[in-house]
Amino acid sequence: MASRRGNAKTREQSDKYSVLLPTYNERENLPLIVWLLVKYFGESGFNYEIIVIDDGSPDGTLQIAEQLQKIYGADKILLRPRAQKLGLGTAYIHGIKHASGNFVIIMDADLSHHPKFIPQFIEKQKEGGFDLVSGTRYRGDGGVYGWDLRRKLISRGANFISQVLLRPGASDLTGSFRLYKKEVLEKLVEQCVSKGYVFQMEMIVRARQLGYTVGEVPISFVDRVYGESKLGGNEIVSFLKGLLTLFATT
Amino acid sequence: MTKLLEWLLGCSLIGMAWGLVTFDLLDLQLPAQYRELAWPMPVYLLVAFGCYSLATVGYRVATFNDCEDAAKELQAQIKEAKAELKKKGLKM
Ligand SMILES: Nc1nc2c(ncn2[C@@H]2O[C@H](COP(=O)(O)OP(=O)(O)OP(=O)(O)O)[C@@H](O)[C@H]2O)c(=O)[nH]1
Ligand SMILES: [Mg+2]
Image (tube, rainbow over all chains, first blue to last red; front, side, top):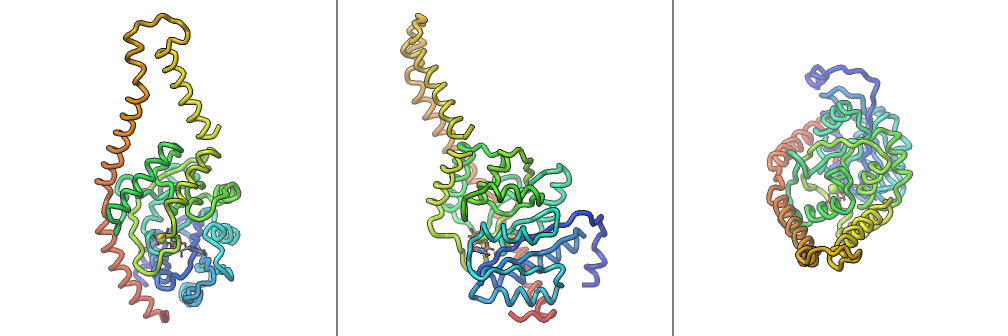
């Protein structure tokens, strides 16, 4: 602890980064992701806050979050729970309302998105003044872990089709590890109508449509270790529906 | 303009150009070779695009990075995190 504080670079504290962590049954993952966030923000010295948006998880995620708040402080960990499961899209909207940073980082709480990339997102944003920086599994050193051939094929195929039809100017449409200028995110959320899975795709497509600039950082996506996937269901069908909707409306 | 309209526009332009040459709609008296070359064009284009798609997707699947190191690093960090959080009094 002492040594980590010693290593922390002091930076100009004009920028603040609000991390939105939507959780539903993530009691095992939440402490780990929070620990990692604290570690990497501590090492890089950026000013931050973590906003946990729990949707009444029956596994007691919120109780864990309360303990974490005691450990790391109420200025770093903010709890903005909702009584019931209202979906990922509205969880973001709810979280943004409570974000005090001028930048917002959106990521999954299931350890698929590693906080070690956040300093890279921030550097990238500063470097190009981007409105939005998106993590990408499909470029450079980016990649995945724990995917079989079938899943890789579906992922690459779906990505290819979306690239051809939408020409979105970003290589990872369905990834949800991104950094936004807060006002840009607010504007986008206002404009986006889709739910669930397609939401991420719509956000980046609309971003381009509105003339926002997009930077990309390659990320490694490690499949969740703990807990269950919430989206699952019929992902392919909802993806295709969403894709066609965007194709016809943007 | 939506992407759908862009595509419709693009396709109809190509279709028109194809029709002009193949059926000599404007009576330009084009040489017969042009026509012969033009009429199977849509099929060639489709086949070429199909091959390009398959090759691209195939190549990208084959070269999709497996992030073994990232997974190992994460496992190690999970251990470290659990130990430290326990010390700080977190009850799972
Ligand atoms: N607040 C809230 N969070 C949610 C809801 N649904 C999912 N989440 C969280 O959103 C993030 C992404 O959900 P996942 O279930 O991991 O979806 P996914 O990444 O497509 O699926 P996996 O393949 O299992 O990783 C996780 O942190 C979830 O806990 C919801 O209805 N409300
Ligand atoms: Mg996930």
